Image 1 (tube, rainbow, N blue to C red):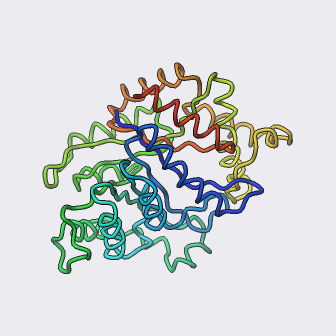
Image 2 (cartoon, rainbow, N blue to C red):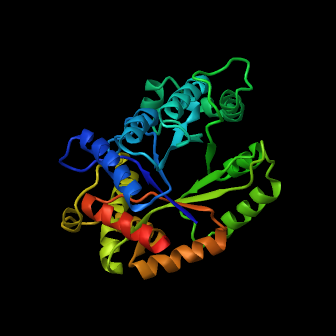
Length: 322
C-alpha cells in the first residue's frame, strides 16, 4: 500500500496564519526525507482554522523545496473554477516539476452563504460538475476544442475526491477515487467500492484505484496518540456547536475548560473513528482497513497542535507501513 500525507495548513491558536503555510512546506520536506510517496494540500476558503486556499500556489512552493515526492491537490474544488484555468495552473506546475504533479478535484462549494457569495458561486454551481470534469480532462488530454498551455508531454494524472454518488462518477470516468471520512467498519463503503471496481470504465488504459483518507496519529503509546488527536477532534466538535471551525488549541488548554455534554460525545466519537495509537495498534487498524476496502493508498490527513509531535507521527507511520 502506498502512503501519502494530506496537510490542510491548520492554524494554531496564538500564531499568525502564515505560520501554517510555512509549516506545510516544512512538513512536505520532512515527508520526502522519510520516504512518503505523495504530499497533498487542500482548498478551503475563509475558514478561520485553515490557511490553505490556493493549492496551485502552495504546491509551487513545495515543489521548489523538494525533488522527488509527488505533489498534488486533495483537492481543487472544481465548481469554484473554470476548468481551463485549473488545467492551466496544473500544467504550469507540471512544467516546473515534471512527472511529479497530481490533480485531485472535488465537488464541494464554500461552506456558508457569505463565502459562496464572495466566490460568486451558489449551490447550483455543483450541478454541472460532471460536465466540468469532462471538460477539464479534455484540456489535460489535449483533446479539447482549445489547447491549454503549456502543452504537456503527457496528461497530468487526475483523481476524484468522492463520497456517496461521487464514487459512481469516478467509475464512469475511469478515474482513481479518493475517499475520506469514517471508513473503518463501513459495510456501505465496502459495497460502494465493489460497485466501483465492477462498473469501472477504463480511460486510456486506467484501472480502478482506491485511496482512503483518514486521520492517523502514531505515538509511543495509545494514550499519548489519543491525546495528540484531541485538538482536531475538539475543533470539529466546536465547529458544530458554534458554526466556526477554530484554530488548533494545545491539549492542556482543551483539558482545562468545561466540556458540554454534547461536545464531549462528539469528541469521543471523533477520537474513536481516528486511527490513533502505538505503532502496533495502528498497524492492526490499518491491516483491517486494507482487508475491508482493498485500498491501494493511504492518505493520512492528521493534524495536531504540537508540530514536533506531528512530524514524529509522520516518521513512525512511514516506518511501520514501510
